[in-house]
Length: 437
Image (cartoon, rainbow, N blue to C red):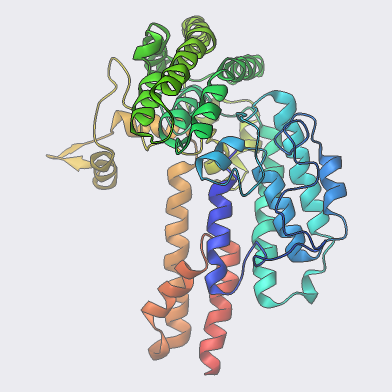
């Protein structure tokens, strides 16, 4: 559930006149703290005890700016790994060393929160808002409505694949090796504490895989076969040879402050956590995948899934970001066996665009596999490109000699990542404004 990336895009757009977050300053209650009410390890938005009803109570009576900030913050805190990765744990009051919960109950409650926030947002009168506020309103409404519509297809993804951007087991490892900050002894202690929670997260992952299998959502056989070697490699590794341990040791070696004895104690605790709570779940996952090879189909593509007609009626943007279970992965995983080519992503994109090499049609295996495990991803980008070209031509036709390409680019880029229908309204307003000059 990638909330932060959208939030960063929306908040960065404040330079162009609209924003999702209010300006920095005291809250409406007079308290300058950014912590939500009851922000503790057991009752914060990241906890299993926090509910959509509790969120609704917190959001009552707020101004639109206050509602934007408080609701977005609560939704973002449902994904504490992302909060930690982007250095917002202290700012957002995340003081518990937790991992993002991916259990069925937690995810469903999060969807209830999307619906709650959407319903409350629509209680604000859009017509009375300023043009800038209307853009913020429209973007947020689109995002929340899009998430709410995806709930029907909650399990229409493959959370264990060779593709690191969508694979939970890969994303979990990357969280520790690439994204978890180690800038102090407290950071290191939190990282070690979180290592002890990986087993519970993998149990939730396995629960989700079984729920998908029951619903008829099983990755194609080639995806399982390409994924299995990487999982088996980790399952058979020694704790001190694992990326979890090696990366922590490297960061501790470079860290100033803790004594040598303190660093050794942290590494010993990390080794124990990896040995007891990380490697066994990898072995369990490997065993499950080996069994899945026997039942997985050789067919692939959205067309083979249950409710495929309803799924294909989802907007492409929904297919794009709902398929991505991960948040911060690299473009393409490189582990695999058999026909899985180890090619540079740039070469693959070039081959896909040209289609030919030495007179022969090229269908890059890895590129096709990428789209199989992330339906709509490439198409959504291409549709966006076509829409921007369409809007540019519309502006050129209506403005003629007054059309300024640089100004058009500033408009599109300066407003951040907008839903296409919102972008079209923004461009239309820009054209009318230019014509009145």
